[in-house]
Structures are given as structure tokens and as C-alpha cells.
Image (cartoon, rainbow, N blue to C red; front, side, top):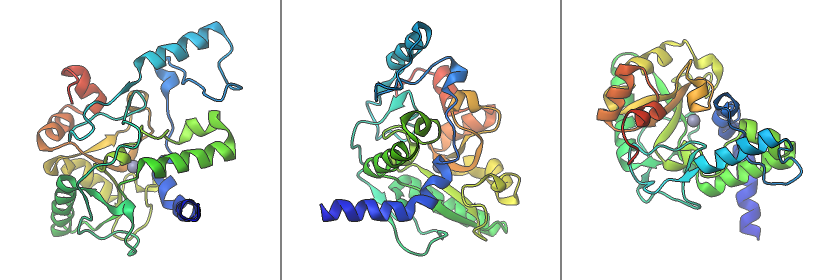
Length: 258
Ligand SMILES: [Zn+2]
């Protein structure tokens, strides 16, 4: 019990950096004509139309069957198995805005090696970067989401926080970054900076994509996040970047067997 309490307490302390990314995100599932299913009963959609929409979304939600896959698609429709935990998490040797080692600095081995190369290349070209937040466990995401539910109710919480299993950070393949000066960590003011521009132009060379691009909000369900890098491997990253598409669109174009 004490352990659980201390986990929750540390989570609270981590809230600022954790919410940096997800807290400012929004789900635009309504743009897709889909209403999320409410689970607390009192906020259940009342009209026949919204009920139908909710059922429609439920039909579309599927559990990711191979979460270990590098280009795995994770979003509000493709959710990770409960308590999924990547087995090869390591600490990438990159600077983080916080010097204190924390679980959220971890990434899967291959992604960690790639982010190290990306940071080194950026530095060579005079671009300073710093990591903000990478891995987030299912448990951490669950605690974070529940915290928001307690604070704002489930309906509101679902508008800005990812439900456990739906956050890319749980794959260990995503990382939020910022400029070397540590300003604008996972915040809108990062957009348009030289670092953001460099990332948009070069991330694919190291196997990363800007996962939530501008103008694709209705497809990804997230607002523009120039700081959220997702490792998908070089081949996939190149295709996605070259065609200016999202991971969702990539899988629309090819059968989903990630
Ligand atoms: Zn992020």
C-alpha cells in the first residue's frame, strides 16, 4: 500500500512533464464521426444517434496483436494489451531536461540507439536538443488518466488525456524533445523553432517521424505536436515523410500487419 502510495505521489510530482505532451493534446474523434464510449454510465450517450456512433467506435477498437513490432500503430482505435511492457527498455545516452534518471527517460533499445544518432547529427549541425519524456508505463498512464478523471470527470478527461493502452509513449518508441536550452518542453512554442524545423527535415534519416503533423489532426486525433518523435524504422519513416502522410494513412495504404 505504501508502495502504491509512493508511486502515485511520484506520479503527481511528474505530472508537469507528463502532461506536457498528452495534456495539451486533444482527441478529435468527433471529426471522424465517432463518439467515444463512456464507461461510467452517467455520461452515456443518450440519443440513438450517439449510441450508434459509440457502438461504431467500439467495433473499430482492436487490441494490437504484436505490440513489439517497431512500426506498430497505436492510437485510440488500436490499443496496447493491458499491462504491456516492452522488454528491452534502456536509457539512451542523450541529454534530458532533467538530470535525474527516471523511467520516463527510457526507450526501447533500437529506438534509443537511433535517438542517440539523431542527437549527435543535430549537434554536429549546430542544433542542440534535449529529451523531455519518452517511455510511460501502462500503470503510469492509468494513474495519470484516473487522476484527470477524478479531477474533471471521465468525459472531459477523455478529451485531453490518453486512456491507458492508447498512448504511444507506452511502446517505448516515442520521445518528446525540445531545444537544447530546455525552453518549450512539449509546448506549442516549440513549433517554428530551428530545432523543430531541423527535426521535420531530418528525423526520417534516423527512423523517426513527426507523429502528429499539422493539418492531420482529424486523422491522428491529436493536435500538431512538433516535439513528439516516434521511431518507426528508417524504411517506414522515409515513406511517411516523403509522402507527407501519417502512420494511420500509411496503414490505410498497406495492409495492417504491424
Ligand atoms: Zn509525446
